[in-house]
Image (cartoon, rainbow, N blue to C red):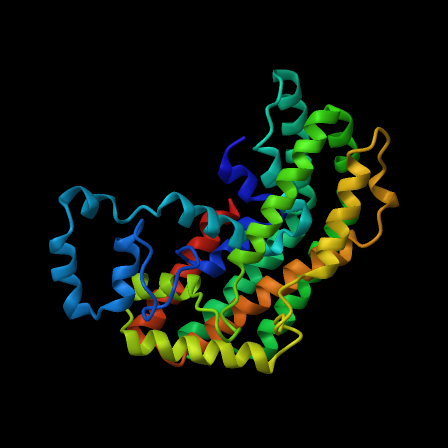
Length: 326
């Protein structure tokens, strides 16, 4: 199965539109740039007038490769996109790490197809949220009430999808060998940790993460002043809207507790997904956490942008929503 196919599981493909071309979580301009990706950090530390000399100093090969995200950047972006897919999306991501026999691949593909169908209402809710945010960005002000209503609809659909995916989880358990089930749980935990990291600490003092912000700097040629204004406003909005936006709680205890219970049960010889409590709540937590933070990010960005930048950003949101809707 392709990475794009997995990305579609659990509405992750649609709400990926909210992140645009968000880069991996990297230090802000004041911090030293990582040595492995100087091209990605350079736009943050320079204004548009200084960008050309920086590009000229780079090797020609680096200039040609600069549009492509580094591997670690793409991985963080992929995990960031799965905030609305809940635990189901993390399981789907983990499947691609398994070494499957040919007959198992066929069976798992059938399970994946069934999951995609079950998640269609949540996918549609994610697209509605993307359109709501695009409308707000274009107008220069995101309507908080409309955005939160769209987030509530998305969260409810993600939770509802859990109930319809129980048979698929049982089928998956039956298809995999004990060793494969153990590997799946290990990978699931790894993806959860990466999801937590990718979904940000921008609101915490002492943390300098700006994945989505760096994406805007690149796509819209933001100045350092504009980028800092957006970051400061975003952090203030998150703190003011806690616990809806997650507040300072980056531990995601209810998700961690569910994953531990799921892992123990899934590795056993006998498994019934219906016996596990907390899965729906865990998926809803992930959906609400990620979607709310993205809504607050665009709420912070819209007033800072120029009319041309707002128009470009709104179109990017709509374009990416259309790309992932198919």
